Image: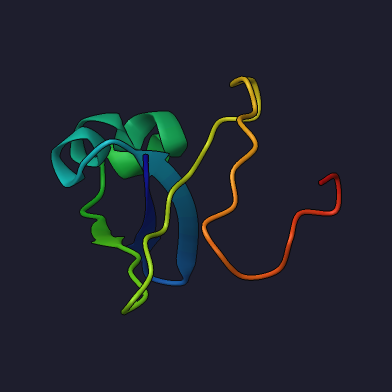
Length: 73
């Protein structure tokens, strides 16, 4: 999943979705006012990195793609 910023005026909320189109369809699930007002949706990116979001109820898979070693290793 990807991380998105949803913004209306001073209201900023972050949410996860599979794609920009998925976030457009699910924006009312994030906040009810997003269903009735024009909302700016922006995928958050960081050059040189991949940002992924994992649900807390998903089974955790230990993985390390570099950087510091995992503490449980």
